[in-house]
Length: 476
Length: 62
Image (cartoon, each protein chain N blue to C red):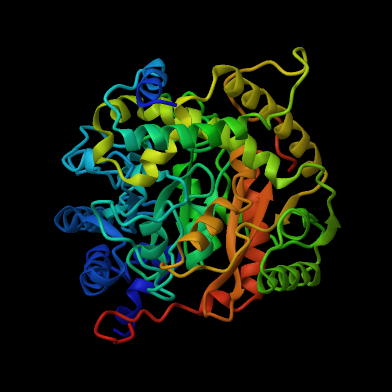
C-alpha cells in the first residue's frame, strides 16, 4: 500500500488509530523503522545500540495481543528510542561513556518499564553526551561518533540528548525519551524542529535514569507533534515508589488538548531574548509571528515583567549543577577520570571545591527564585518565551555550540521545576528549525499542550520534514 | 604555587595522583567556580530554609 512508504513519518496518533483498527501491523511498522535505521544511521549516528531482534520479538507480541482482542494503549506497537542513560534490563547502557561500555543493567528504568508494559517497542539506545552532561564543549573524544542533525548533517543536533533529536526528526523513531538538566531535551528539540516537553518536576519518574544533577534532572519527551507528546505523557505520568520526588496526580488528558486558545491569558516574557541577551533577529521575528498567530486564534496576550535576569537562574543552576554532578560521579572521577571525555572531566573538576556553604546558599536562593517566578507565571494560563537564543550552529563552530547550549533560556525552568515545551515556529535562512518555549503552571501540562496544539494546527511547520543527505549524496 | 602545594590542595579534596596538567586544570576551573559562587546573593539567614527541592504543591487552575 502507498502508506508503507511513509511509515517512518506517521505520527503516534495516526499509527495508534491504524493499529487499533487493524489497518497497520506493529511488525510491519517496526520492520520499516529498522530498515530506515540501517539505511540512514550510518550517517546520522543517532543510535549507540540498535536492539533489532528484541524489537522484532516485541512487535510480534504486540501484534498477537491485537489479534487476541485485548484492549490496547495508544502507545501499543509504537517504536521508540531511549537516551542511553536509561536503564534497560539485559541491554547495554553506556551513557555515552567509556566507563560503562560493558554495563548491562539488571532492571529497567521505570519509564521504559511503563512503555514496555503497554506494548510499545524499543528500537534501541540513543546517543548522548557523556552521562548527559558536560560544559557545552563538543569534543570528539567519546567512544561513539557525534550525532548529526537531519536538517543539515553538518550542523549540531542539540545536546545532551543528541541522538534523541536526530532520531525522531529523521523518522528513525516515533518518539524518544531523554533527560533534561539544563535543556538537554528542549535544546535537541529546538535544533531538530521537534516538540520537546520537560514536564513538571515530579510528574515523571527518574528511577533508573543515571543521574547528572540530583535536583535539576527532569525526564523529557521528544516527538514530532504535540498530540504525540500528550499521548506519551499520558502513558508515562504518575507516582513511582522508586522515585520519592514523584507526585501522585492525575495524568493530563491528551484528548482535551484540542480545546484551542480562545480566552486563554498567555503571558510573554521578552526579557530573556531582548534585554538579557541579544538573540538572533530571525528568532525574534519568528517569536513575534508566533505570538500574532496565538492572538489571531483568540488568546489574550499579556506582557509580563519578570524581575529576574536570566543570568541569575544560570548562576544558581551552575553552582547547584556542578556540586551535584561531582557528588554523583566522585568515585569514578577519583579512580577512572582518564577514561572520561574532556567535557565531563572539566565539569566535575569545576565542582570539586564548591563549598557546602555556597551550595546551600544556591539551594536557598533557588527557592526564592522559584517562588518569585511562580508568582509571575500564576497570573496567566501559560507563558511564551524564547528557549534557544541563537541559530543552530555548524558542528565545526565549537564556540557557537557552547553559546547555543549554555546561553539558552532553558535552565530557568530546571531551576523552578515548571513544565516547559519547545516547538518549531519556522525555518531560518540556513534551512534550520526555529523554536519558542511555552511554560505552564505546576502540573498544568494540559494547558501548555493545548497552546502548542493550537499553534501547530494553525501553522504549516509540521508538513515540512528534513531532506536527509546521506554520505552518497542521495536525499532520503 | 609549587607543584607540591598544588598537590596538597588537591589532597584536601581527596584527589591523589593528579598530573601537573591535571592540577593546573583543577586550579583554573576551581578559580572559575569560586568566582561564580562569589556572585551568589547574601540571603538573610532567616529568609529561606535550605531543603531538598520540590515544587510548590498548588493545584493547577482548571
